[in-house]
Amino acid sequence: MKDSGAFRVLALSTRAAAAAELAATLERQEMATPVAVESVQCFGRKKTAVAVAHCKRGRGLIKVNGVPIELVKPEILRLKAFEPILLLGRQRFMDVDLRIRVRGGGKTSQIYAIRQSIAKALVAFHQKYVDEQSKKEIKDILARYDRTLLVADPRRCEPKKFGGRGARARFQKSYR
Image (tube, rainbow, N blue to C red; front, side, top):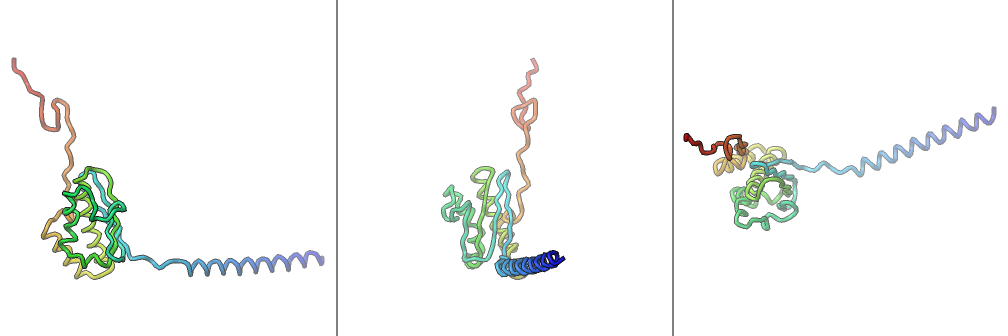
């Protein structure tokens, strides 16, 4: 009988120790949990190109596929990617970091998808974390300049049909 009592005391003490250890672990995890980061994620599309922009509080960094936007290729279309920044002014981008991932499509479509994702991300960030007035201001400026900065172009390539070499062109017909 004495052995079972000793075993019971040992079991209770190990349970208490385990409970205390679990409580300490949970407390450490709560302290280590980071504060929620203010961020939004938006996408831009053009034909088959898709650009996803992650916008969060920061110091004005804008990177496309890990490369600064100032070095985006092709050089001739770089200004197209800069349009939202030039329209709204660099100061609106000073307190946010934008990281854009783009894939699919060709070079031109990718640039158009990038510019749309930048514009939409800034509008969404201002709506969620700043104020409705600044969001409306930004949206009006962008829409007045070019609606495709905020709204995707729905046009798609029409598939080829039989009886011709393209979607609409037909093979030449002979009557004799």
